Image: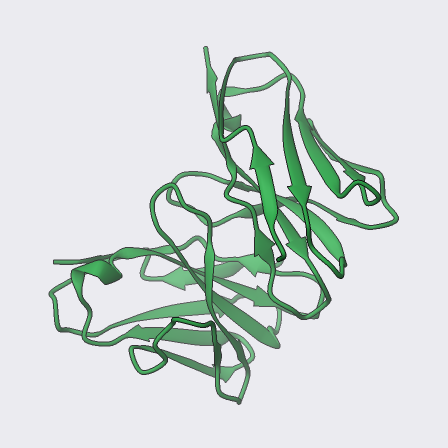
Length: 114
Length: 112
């Protein structure tokens, strides 16, 4: 149980285009979902926290107009990287929380912007 | 400032040997401490979660300890296997429902 999926697992896009990443909790309802970014040999950095049906809370330094987060249901959250640039290339990981205690991570999405 | 420090940064051991990874934290308040294993190119997978009242918790060959007084934790891996090669991340949850605070991880390489 407690499986979180992400789609796609990897994506290559051209600079200036937008790309959407999906995060799904497959066997539980997630009241809260988190989006992280991880650069090579670095730890996970929290980008934003989203609760179903409400606006996401972004961490300091994360552009909310560039990284659009939608948490439309208790099992799905999406992260859209708009007008992507090469410096947005990274490993994006989501996590889903069924309560205020546990947090389950997805397998990650590798984004490469050319 | 809430911080989680891990040591060593990287470690190489022979297959079958034991090893211990360290985690020191300066996080307050404190709800729980977690150890995750992250394979290259994958998301973190939970190994153990301990609250302040728990001193030790095991998950197969992984045993985590917690000293809430000194704010130190360790992860002991026994009889290491090649598949143990990964990054091990110590994470502290200050309060239920708040953002997790991540250490930078220890990269473990197990060689044959």
